[in-house]
Image (cartoon, rainbow, N blue to C red; front, side, top):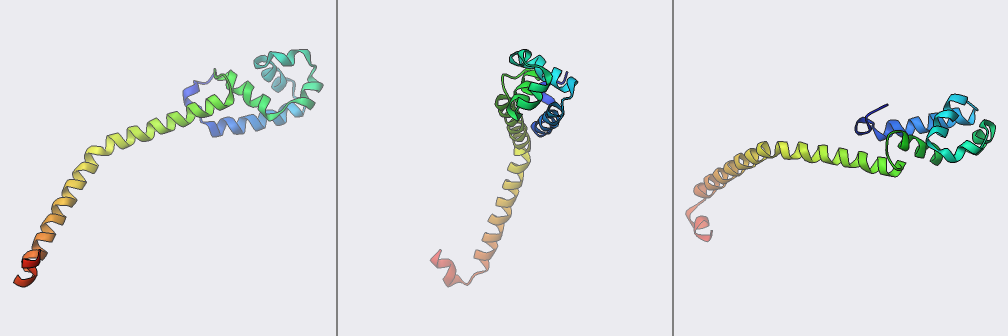
Length: 127
């Protein structure tokens, strides 16, 4: 079984579509896999499941397989993981960005002083 925190939601969406095709084709192993996560399907025979199964059923089964209550919860968790990684990367880069900002500000300050000091005396009086 996969660690839920390492599964990318795009992969899971593709896996759901593939599993749906296999179920609709009557693949016994695929139907057994879904049925193991969705007990309500136990009362139906394989041909009936193959005809009636929907993508939402597959998504729900995969989410439960990966220990989530439902597919939406899994997608939200994946979004949280991506957001946390982005925030961590931003926080890690803050010292470098702060340094660049200080250096840029120092250069701008020096440049504005040199421009002001080279201006004619009458222009400097207006500042």
